[in-house]
Image (cartoon, rainbow, N blue to C red):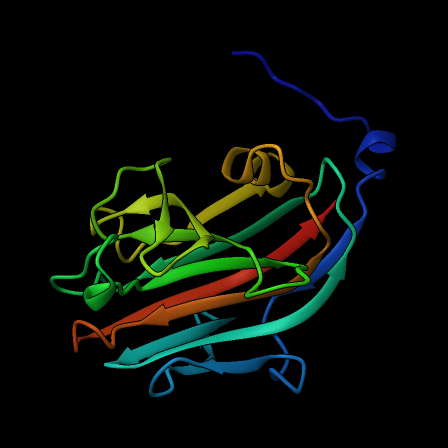
Length: 205
């Protein structure tokens, strides 16, 4: 086994651009973005640790905040999440049943039309590491990090380099600055009840 040791001087070069561990009230910076009835987003304590719990009962809304982060290589976003289950009969390609228990999205600056977004999704059926567009907009891209119920109930840590993901999804287009970050749990299409949990969101460069 090869063990890699990061020297303290190198580790210190990482700069924290944003951090949210949900240990404090959500406050004014987090806002609901409504697409249907409101999903219930609230801070809860689980085994003495605070996290964000999102309960959707035939609802569809995101919880998001404004950011302003200039584009640069080497910028990573890390978080952990878990789900109760995927919505019954939900799809990843049909608008009528396009529900997901958990997704984290990053919104990019745009001058015309809706913002381009990268959505990191816990998909219903799509294969891990596959990509797809939102059924109603090619400006909203999805990368599948987890899929199905096999790991439901487990906290999973994710980390992504969004500059690399931008190039994969938007090819030769220049990456603009990041203007928003959010989470999205919805079940309005399938008329089901699902719960997602989110915690320890960290953006570093």
